[in-house]
Each structure stands twice: as structure tokens, then as C-alpha cells.
View 1 (cartoon, helix red, strand yellow):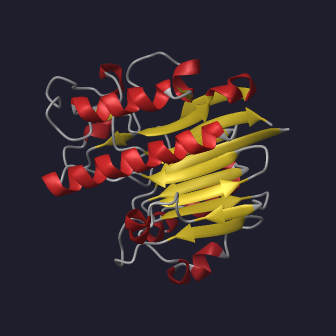
View 2: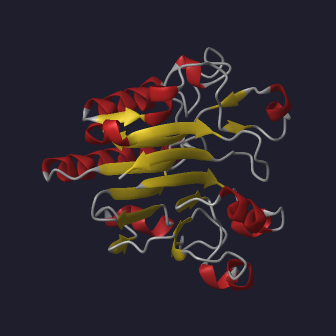
Length: 256
């Protein structure tokens, strides 16, 4: 059976609903859709959610109103869904949905942004380490894992338009990139790079400078898969033509 997974940082679910989101979902027809930065609780989008049919829906919302948040739309109901990966200090920001599908575990995560302050950068790095610890535990149990979301770090120079200018900016700091190296070495693959090694493949563009029109962007949204799923991966791609957010959706097709 082939499953199409899509992931998108929508930068506000209520806003993107006003830009044809429901129609896009109907046309794209994903088996699993993961959203980040929803900035909304489910009770705030009740009427809008009624326009999307055929999905089991789960939210993780931040305690702070209008902030962060992730959502999962799934045609197949997961065996279980958690809003945590076991580190309580991160749970109140609504960044995590962990769905167990039996044959694999899916993580939909909105990783923290570290640009605002040294404190937020430390929070981001702590979040990264807690996540890595959870991945080690699951790998030891022999679990097959798919991870998607806004990682808020471009891994290599090919993953952003202006690497030299951003070498001291959070999102492309050496320690952030080194963490991605350690994560991949644990036994995960960057699925896009299995299928597409080309430059200019970005998922986020600065709105103020109108960077999208010039494709001056960053690839900070990813689908990762545990290495034991490599043989199941059919296709991984970016959908830059889809508008509505400062990010664009990304996709993964898997035979399970």
C-alpha cells in the first residue's frame, strides 16, 4: 500500500483557510497531512474543519494563544496519538504530535526557532537533544520512524541561497548543523536528498524582502525516515508553487 504524506508550516491555520486551504487539501488528497505553526486551537476552527472530509484530526496547541501548534489529518486512524516525546518542559508550546500507525511511528514537529534571543537558542538546542534522546530509545526498540515538520535549520550550504551571509544566524549555525549530522548518523535519511540533489530547493522565503519571487530561500522543512525504511520510499519532493504561507508544503510517498 502506498501512502502520500504532506507536511506544511501554514503560519496560521485560520489565515490559510481563507486562502483556499480546504480546496487544496481536497485536490492534493494526502493520506496523512501534518501542519505546523497552526496558531489555533481546534475550537477556533470548528466551521473551517467541517469543510475537510474523511480525516481523523488531532491538534497539539500551545498554552499561549495564537502561538506555535501542530495538527495531524489522517485518513487512517492511528493506533495512538501523543502530544509529547517525554520531555514535559517542551509540551506547553504545542510542538509535538506522535502518531503510532503500527508499521511505523510518525512525528509531526514544529522545532523551535532560535533567532529571537540566546535563551531561545538554548531552548531550541535543548529541544533538539531531548528529541534525539527519544529517537535513540525508539531505535533501540526497533521502531520504524518517519519525522516531518519545520526543523528551523538548513543542514548544508546547498540548503539555503546565501550560506556565507547567514553563517552566524540561528538556523545555519555550526552547532545547529552539527546536530543534524548527529541525528542522521543515528540511522536516519533526509528523504529529499535520496531523490533530488539539486540546488535551489527551498521551503521558506522571507516575506518582507519578497524573497520568494527571486527564490532566495532556505530549506528548513524536512521529511526524515529511519534507514530501515529506505527501501519503502517512493518519492520525496517540495511544492513551491503552493502559496498561502511563507513556507511551502513538502511531500513523501511511502510503500508500507
